[in-house]
Each structure stands twice: as C-alpha cells, then as structure tokens.
Image 1 (cartoon, rainbow, N blue to C red):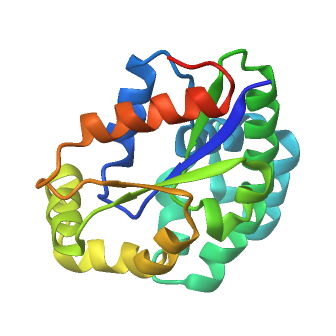
Image 2: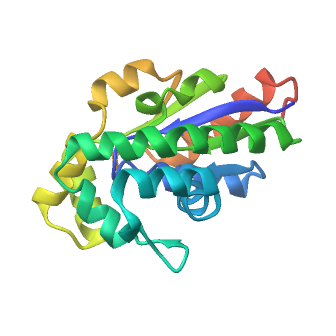
Image 3: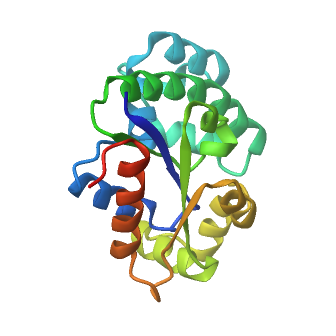
Length: 199
C-alpha cells in the first residue's frame, strides 16, 4: 500500500504548484478542495445535512449553490465551522478510500486544512509549503482578483503559519529565493526510499 503523504500550507503558499510537480513525477495527488466540491454535490447524506443546516436555498437543481453558501459563511466563523464539521468527515473518508486504492510508492493529499480537520491522523507524513506572508497575500490577490482585506480575512480562518509548519514532517520553502524544483525532487527521492523503492 502507498505511503500516505499530506501536503499543506496557507493560502497563497504555492502548495498546488508543488502538487503539480509530484504529478509530473508520476505520483497521484488527491485535491481535497476539488473533492469536497464533488462530494457536496454527490453525497446524499451530506446534502441533506447541509440543507438542514443552511436551508433549501443551499442547492439549486440538485447542485450546491456556492454563492449562497459563501454568503452564509462569509465573516461568520460559527457557520464556517458548522460547514467544515459537515464536509470534512465526508472528504476525509473519500480521501482514505482513494489513498487505499493507490498502487504507487506513495500518494499525496493536497489540503489547506489538514491539521484543522484532524485528517493528519490518516496520514503517514505531512509536507508543509512555507512562504512569507506578504508574498502569499500578493499571490492570492493576483490569482483570485480580491482585495488585501479579503486575503487577510481568509488567512485568519486558517491555522497560524508557524504553528502549522511546526507540525509538518517536511518543509518546502517557496519564497522565490530558493527554487522549489530541487527541493521537491530531493523529497521525492527521500519518500521513495522510505517506501522501499529507491529512485
């Protein structure tokens, strides 16, 4: 069975870029955000729970009304926590099933909220992607066409970066001073060896 590797980092840290490098190296990657969107449309129990919590306007023609849900949880940490409490267990179960099906030396789960959701318990190791906060703010503003205030609000909903990185087993520095490709390649070799399959 594949080693189960988590990949996390704050918003704008570049963890998706790192995930894409792992994919190029032939390592399967589970994208938790994409999976959560799919599960919220497919899992009938979860759909019922979301409707019970947020009302019938949560779904339009059987599909999650993302704009409505976003308006509900925007600037409301209690409602955001309620939504996460519904979606995280379903996503964790789906990721666990997916991980168990992989036949490679290791597989990666890319997720912003690995520690916040408790999903590190299902993983063998966690990689953190670390970037200076100002760089993360600039990247996210450019990527999502949002204000600095909006990025800071999103950051406030995530675990403090220093604490998150302390909990990780490996760190990749994405600070535009150190190239990330050699870091990922070295980590790939390390993980292959740990899985008993030296490169």
